[in-house]
Amino acid sequence: MVHWPDSMVTYIPEQKLLLSNDAFGQHIASAERFDDEIGWDIIHEEAAKYYANIVYPYGDQVSKALNVVSQLPVDMIAPSHGLILRSYIPQLLESYRKWSSHESDKKVLIVYDTMWGSTKKIARALMEGLESAGVPVTIRFLQTSHISEIVPDVLNSRAVLIGSPTLNNGMLPTVGALLTYLKGLRPKKKKGLAFGSYGWGGQGAKEVSAAMQSMGWEAPLEFINIQYSPDDSELNNIKEAGKKLGEIL
Ligand SMILES: Cc1cc2nc3c(=O)[nH]c(=O)nc-3n(C[C@H](O)[C@H](O)[C@H](O)COP(=O)(O)O)c2cc1C
Image (tube, rainbow, N blue to C red; front, side, top):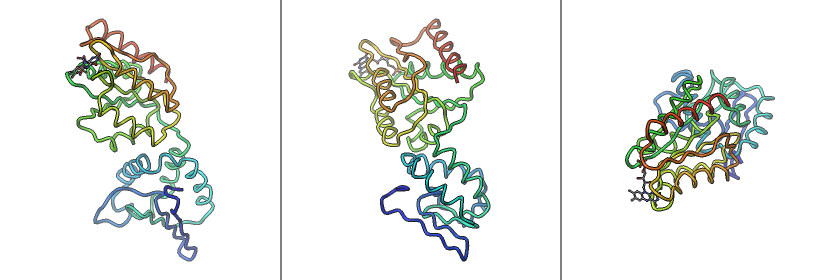
């Protein structure tokens, strides 16, 4: 089950070669054949993207597989997707150990969508507050980042803040798509904070908050719901909330 029922791994002892199937894969096509020909930074980023989008729900199976692999003398790993590993095997094994045990960095991801910019103002105020507490932030706008690009940031971040305005008594469809996708990937050990702007009912941020709760994410702060465009005093309060969350982290 890393990551299909029929996924099998083959070890060739004569060559100390592991044909690892979906484990250690990357979604990348290049003229190069080996990891050191393209560099650790790219391998690491692409392997994280592959893990987050494909392997994330199977962390327990990955941990078991890692226990076996770490006992084997391995000179080379040839996954079914991506480049062949021969130089960065210890680094990638360490990344897999971290990802499969749901360890993350003291970093925050903010993802949002907006119709007219109010939810963006909340997102940026949260970012300022978090940064004032010394916490690095990645901010993603759903109209310019594909969800498959966002999931590696979820994997590596300790807290994920998701913002949506209210549209027709609910969250925006783009935010709904992100949450549906995330739910299937089962990201664990996350702190979450929902936020958004609304006009009258305000169900958008509430729905985001409920989706986070259903994934078992901790909610250190109450979700933030602002009527129409946030004024200066509301923006200050939001910055303070960001700072508080940063201190909690
Ligand atoms: C088509 C449309 C439908 C809306 N439906 C709702 C709604 O059902 N409930 C609500 O509270 N606000 C609703 N609003 C108001 C927006 O949530 C509000 O204008 C909000 O400030 C927009 O945030 P944004 O600037 O981040 O897009 C709607 C707005 C539009 C354009």
